[in-house]
Length: 176
Image 1 (cartoon, helix red, strand yellow):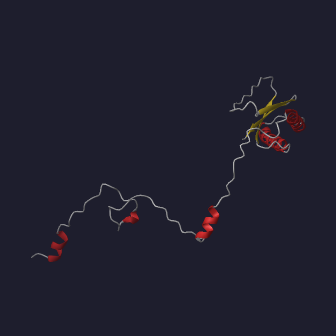
Image 2 (tube, one colour):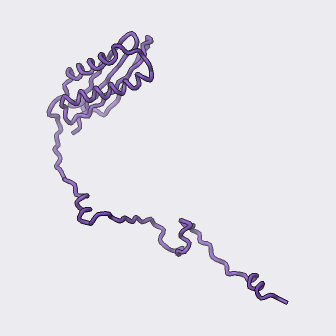
Image 3 (tube, one colour):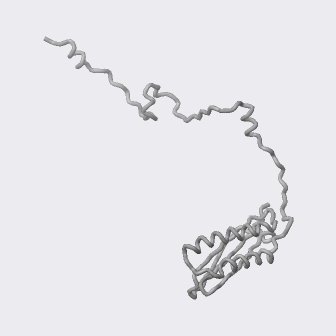
C-alpha cells in the first residue's frame, strides 16, 4: 500500500538554474536576474526647484591677472618681528621636549599672525619654528619650494641661550 502523500514528497522538483552573477543583496530575492545592476542615485529635495537654482547660483568674477604684488615683501620689518617674538618667548625657558613642541607651534602661529598684520596681500605666509636643546651639536635646517625669484622671499631668525636654541624661518610666497 502506497501513501499518495509520500509519493508527492518523494517526487523530484524541477532543478533551478543558478546564475553566474551573484545577487547584490539578500533583499533582492523577488527581482529578475536580468535587471540592470548599475548604480543609481535618488535624491528627494527638501526645497522647491526655484530655491535649488538660487542655492547653486554663484557670482562669477573676472580674473585680476595681477602678476606683481602691490606691496613688496619688506624683510627688515619681518625680521624684527621674528627676533622680538623668539627672544621674548624663549629667554627664560628651560628645554622640555613636550613643552617645546607646543611652544614651537604657538610661536609659528604668532609670527604668522603678526606678519599678516603688516598687510602683505596675496602672499601666502608659512612659518616654521624649530626648538632644540643646547648640547654642543650642529643643526642644519633645509627647505624646498617652487620659487618665483622676483616676488617670493624668506627670512630667518635664530635665538640661542644656554639651555636651548630656536630657529624660525618664514616664507612669503606670492599668490597671483
